[in-house]
Image (tube, rainbow, N blue to C red; front, side, top):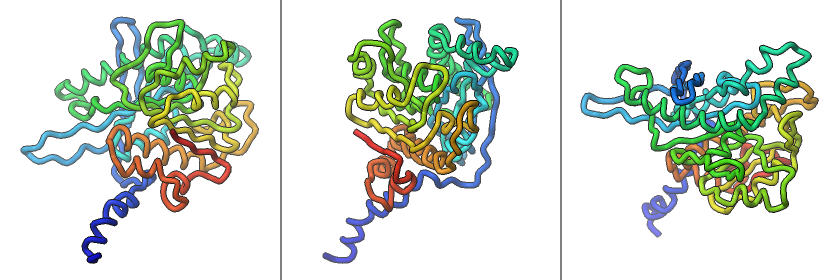
Length: 334
């Protein structure tokens, strides 16, 4: 075979192998704090937006918006949590929008006497706050759409709302699952059809129900999902343990579904710092794994980047997820 023909055959592989989800430039990321007002519910939703640099344009070009990734915090959190995620995703060219959910945010415990904080948190982990959170997601998307077409707004023309990802941790994972395909028999459909892919960190499955409840809850999930949990991923609130978190992945229908189980990772592994009551040492590589897998997932399903999809599906120890996960971590896809 002529050398030129060999090069043509190898070129796609060489281009794919050049993909690195941890690589990022040195461009400055802007952080913008905004508030969406949901008039229908008279509810203010604080946002922290991580905005990548605007793409260069010529006088004849129309600036293209960037894909949008939403993030929902856990119980007692805020839109300022997990900046390591927002900064990296923005550095990779996504507009990362971190939401805050009044009623289950940091004000629940900050405004309570120390002796009452745990009780206040348990009270906030309610069905009513679940429904508020679920309805916050379309309200935020509506607000982003308005700002994207508002002349002079900081986000004018910056958002590609045809490509939207949803993510969250803990109570934020519950929120994410509800708006991206999980069925709850006690409420009307909560699917948000503007979402294209979802990442659930510390996912949850139905508890204290019939054996087939988990299968029914996830049988209609059609979107790409990435689940992230750990072998020590428990929490004092939420009625979830490691077994119930691991029950989600087997119940998902096949097709663009992924799961990473980080060895010895506790509930806080996906956040900024350890939580009260946790005993283990934090593993610095966990954040590296989280950043690599989530970035490749967003690139694959919000940008339709074949290199990212190939990286996610690679079983090679030299290229793909195996280059960042540790031997005792478990990675699977279907």
